Length: 300
Image (tube, rainbow, N blue to C red; front, side, top):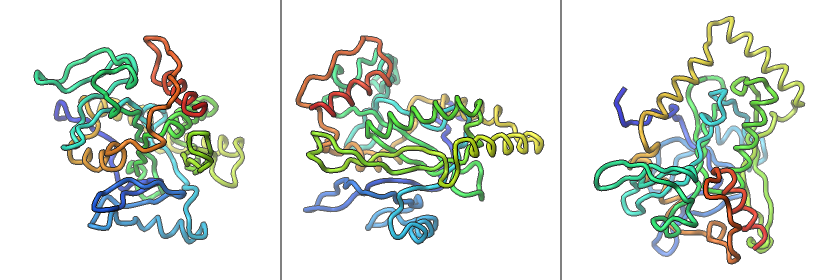
């Protein structure tokens, strides 16, 4: 394994709730009220749709509002990684990632560790550092180790996905990878959004299944996998080792697309609140700081 290279889950495609469009000669991110599933290939018009996108649209009457998924790992933090992230907006190169306590930063002397005060208190951030999450999920049964990645810098999606994964791991007895789940698009309005819906992503039991039915199916699938020799614990350990093999998960190749979609400009929903952000403890966790920021956004 090459040292310094983060080994991420294999990606077969992308899931998004927005796109990049050209306006007045500039390419700008645009929010949407539906999911889009794309391949990893793009042309001048954008990312090419994945065949699953058309199939789900036909099933749901034109707009994809839910996607049946399974997770690759039992550890929530392997399925969904969220960090404060700062990118070079010109090159797409990651510059700094942190968790609200410590960060890894690219310097002239190489990558070094520093305290992470969160974006609001960091002199380096200057409005360009955001919470940034990546969720890997499996769609269909063709490739149980391949994934589609959903990226987000939205507080609501990050907070909701983090909570759901922790809760589902707890109630399933650490059988998160065996649960029949569903990505679901939800909307909410805040004072800052001026009544316009803000869409975010949630995870629920798959449509048609009660929580009890989902848990029973997960137990049966877990037993079947064990009898077949499927070692989920070893898979989680391999993924943890790969993700910890380097400092930055996104390289320049993917970073350019990430910057264009999420970090090119500060949208209204991502701008800092007009009222002061409530004080948080100096060593607050990422979750605590996200909670405080979200409260400020909704009360602004």
